[in-house]
Length: 84
Image 1 (cartoon, helix red, strand yellow):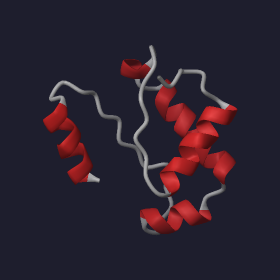
Image 2 (cartoon, rainbow, N blue to C red):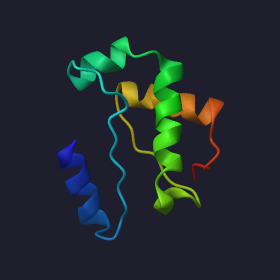
Image 3 (cartoon, rainbow, N blue to C red):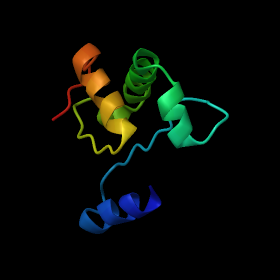
């Protein structure tokens, strides 16, 4: 993930990046993405977005692997803070 953050900062050094881990699972991130239920993960994603004042006027999502499924869950079930 750090290489993606570095790449984004090369494109725009002023970009605000909110990199989040969706759960407090004791296993590795990839295993947690399979074990965590999607509605719970999407709800936590929504709480993380709501807590970040930089994102309140809308934001862009960059996700990969299981993160795309969580992002879609947010878009379908929440999307209170709009995705541009």
